[in-house]
Length: 268
Image 1 (spheres, rainbow, N blue to C red):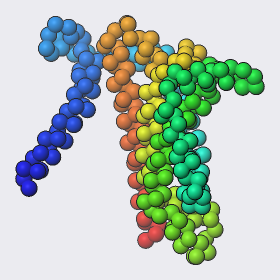
Image 2 (image 1 turned 90 degrees about the vertical axis):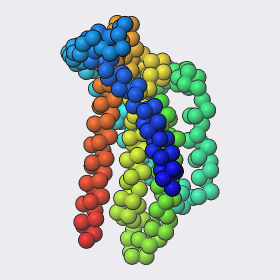
Image 3 (image 1 turned 180 degrees about the horizontal axis):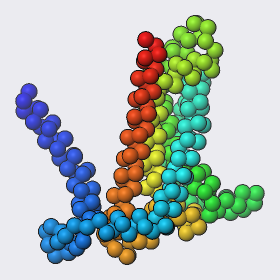
Image 4 (image 1 turned 120 degrees about the vertical axis):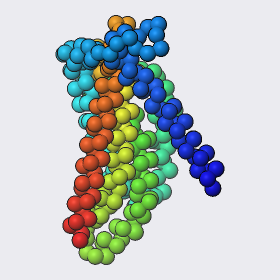
């Protein structure tokens, strides 16, 4: 038994080291004043962070990334939650077709996807190339598989069909049962889907560069433009948007847990 625990701890430590050592090295490089021919940095400084946060381009690009990702995630949840709920609860025969449709983005290479969107949206009546809306549309398709799987699994775990039937027996309407019974019970899945989608979109570069390019500079395009200037600056940018995602994740998780506690208190 102890040997099994030791093996498990070793595996966990190896995985954590594999995940965090590159991030730690990036952070150290971002605060190193000079690190070339020595094992450890020759000095530490926050100069690189000061440089990027004083650059209006960085602030603007980060704001654009946050705006596009937020709009996409909210739009995705607003559309997919009722859609997946309706299919899983009332039209289960359609679930396999919806699963196929939402899996298609995995099979399409990013470049092919971007070229297709450019051909479609560069003609009338759309003419959306170079705007925020073409990115929102492309991002929405990218996160479809993650949103669908997360919401569907959550609905299956709570047995949404049985919950709806029970709520309707107690004279609740379908809408009331959905809002007051189903949604609170799938909140964890919804939050997980939102966080995963946001983190994927915030780091997206290929589609953004091909569809919008310099006309709508996001933080990834800004990072790409700075790659030849200084490795310290690019490392500082990477750590900065990692911290942004971490802070947003903590805030969303706190909001979700506080709502759940409030719901439990109301029920008591």
